[in-house]
Image 1 (cartoon, rainbow, N blue to C red):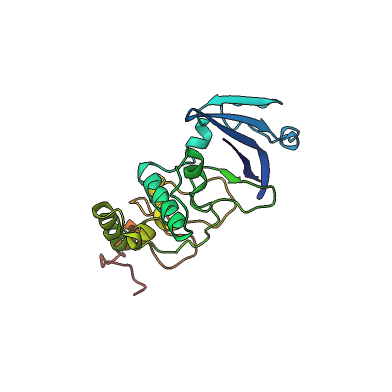
Image 2: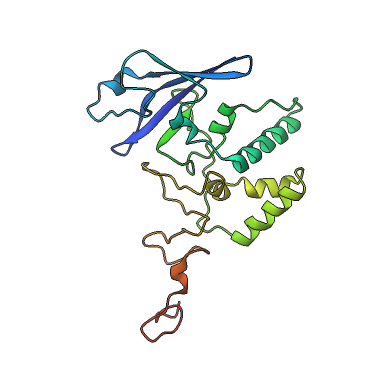
Length: 225
């Protein structure tokens, strides 16, 4: 079985096709052949996306998945959630639950909350995967923790799985790393390093600055808000 995934990156505020990754499986062993796009190679600002794939024409073959792509994939918690969502989707459509591959995990992360600068789609004019754009401004940490506990106790609790797999929690599922190097709307992390978005008077639950005091020593500052 073979899958082709188009890899892009944002340069000068616009998505640029870097190349195409061809994933092949033989006897359940994954290998990747990556080919840089000719237009990308001609750009003066082109750069190597992975040490195993130097800027050159032709296919670069790697055993397994290249490190740059693996870094964009979710960790064990995120993989578990994606597998459950794919299983539920198959049941709703009356299909047999599929065997989930590393490519499924790679493409199952929200494009907005995926860590790293790389973006992925399966057709030149298709959406970047996963195209879920619902990113809340505020992560409700108590609700997220309750959902995580419920999903751990009962793997078939689809309501909890849905809460855990929302874009805000996927940020946590992908090692808590926010998107970097992209001209997409900024997002908030749901871990202890969460910070306020510039120009926004609201604060995240985990924002330590929300407990600051003013010059009089009173919590919250002197604005009264």
